Length: 222
Image (cartoon, rainbow, N blue to C red; front, side, top):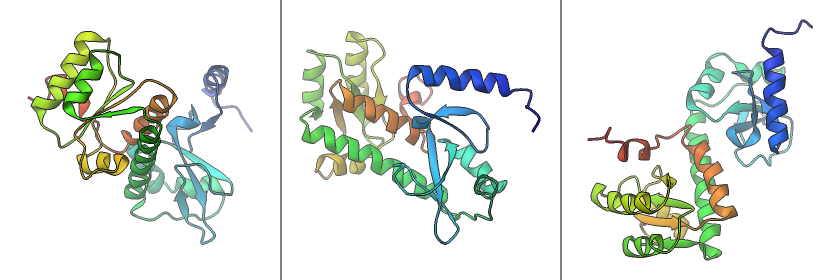
């Protein structure tokens, strides 16, 4: 089989990522190699349908796609799953919604673990009080929260710490599910492994759902 012209660059990229730690896989659409953390795994069900496996635990041979809505849409349009599995492999029309729901649940699950570990601060006043003592691992701002409240939290964090990470793609009801409350508007994850795990999960989610914090604090939403 002839080597494609960009094969050396792919090998170099894969080699660099392996050196940084963690397995890499090739996206079935872009043909680029990425760490598994930024990909979505699919398996072929017993019915012969491509099924997303966000947790990466379903049995069987997997096909991998970059965690990006446009990439998955292209995979559906170009029948990339059939090529990847070397057999006719349709995919449900709701696959994008299924992936987004799985990614939301992944984020909620990690936040729930952080709550049980005592690594979460909830509430406007409580978050601001914590920020005056220590840097956050992640600021959590509900997508449907007020602009005034989230600005006060973010600007305090920004004044005291360099480039605080903010997650704004989850609604107050979704944050509430994570923390056993009806709604949560303001929250904070303390620094540590769970905060880093949440970052990985959240970055995948924002491939399928708008990350509003990118506009909130840039002035582009005004």
